[in-house]
Length: 91
Image (tube, rainbow, N blue to C red; front, side, top):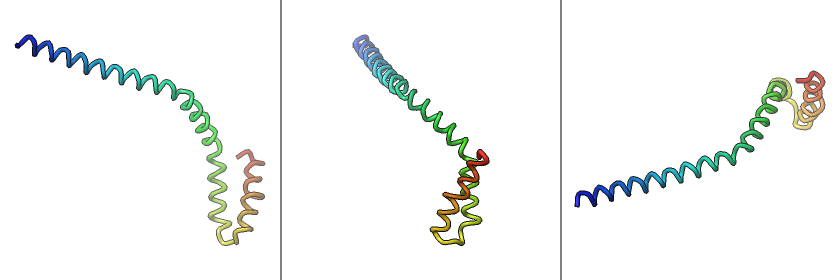
């Protein structure tokens, strides 16, 4: 009886270990498939970081200068003046 219960405990432990190994393998395979997406996201974050200064400059200009004006004039200032100025300055 003692040996049978010991055998059963060992089999249950082996079964649990096998289940954990299968789950770990599935997780690793799933994460490996995400590598290309992560690489693409990293490149996108790099581009966003390069544009951050200009985006902040346009946002600050809008809030501090364009706020009191009407919507059509604000759109003109942002689209025609501030954005073009930032692009001309390579910001």
